[in-house]
Amino acid sequence: MSPPRPTTPPPAATASRGWARRLPTVGPTAFRHLAVVSLVMVVLIVVTGAAVRLTGSGLGCADWPDCSTGHLTPPLQFHSLVEFGNRMVTVLLTIVVAVTFVASLRRRPFRRDLAWLSAGLIGGVLLEAVMGGIVVYTKLNPYLVMVHFLAALPLVVDAVVLLHRCSRDYAAGAGRRLVARPIVLLGRGLVVLLTLVLAAGAATTGAGPHAGSAQGQLVAKRIPVPLRDMAELHSSLALLLVGVALSLAVALHAIDVPERVRRAARILVVTLVAQAAVGYTQYFTHLPAGLVEIHVIGATVLVVGVVQFLLALTHHPPEVVPVPAGAAADTVVPAAAGAAASASDGAAAEVAGAAMTEAAVVPVPGPG
Image (cartoon, rainbow, N blue to C red; front, top):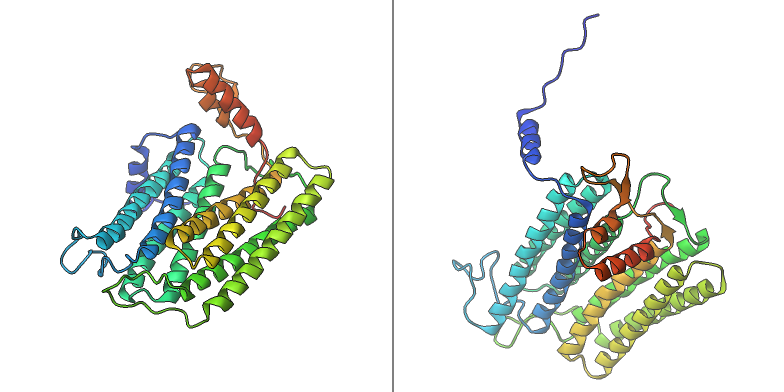
């Protein structure tokens, strides 16, 4: 039998590989900085998107991707500037997540999980951009506006998990549960409840007075459900979520679990109570735009809190990477410690080392 003929990679694959090799490699510390920026930008796009609706600027740019027919930039009018500003945040977010994705491919050591999470950010941002254009063309259809908001929250989850995993070892067998399996299942139940609460909250907004359009513009339609009924459904689900989280926190303080898990539960309960207080206040003060914006920010923080709580239920050690050339060949250091070691300020190094120790407990997704 003759030996198999060598296969030649397609020209496109060869070109792509050559292009990637020309880029500088990225260390774990630099990649973590990019993950932080990505998370900040994802949260910012949620907040500015809500500001567009609450200021009545949803039709400030009546076309997409141009602001108006034949004009990319907006006129010097408040609503147009607000909407166009949100679009510029989207452009900046797209650049940031694209850089993060390329960095994930050039990160050394390479991590497939980080590359997939970074790719998820790009896909989510592009989907949100297209959805935003559809919302404009449908003149702020309330159902699409609702979906547009809810679709941004998985981006927040993705960014939080990316930041969490990028300095921890997620190799097979590296993690261990810190709590019993029923606690993990209850934590996942919180995610289901939170999803229902957020969906009901978005529907409540769709039935409320903040349509996203302003006086003098086409009046946007609202979801044909009494606002009071939607608000009661939303608040009932929210109270159920608070009750489950509080019960879970009490249970965690009654059993033998690491303090980190208890602290994550306490933070989650405090966040939930604060968010509920803002929700009731905005309803009984007839939904002032400022409080509604704070409520949206609280919802985003709540998503981060629930994800962080789930991550705290599992421990993964800091990622270990080889030291730079010039050090002992067989020496390895934790990725998180590398940043502290490179800091010239001794106090900063001490704080970073403490943060690494605190971080030693976490991640999540996976069958427990």
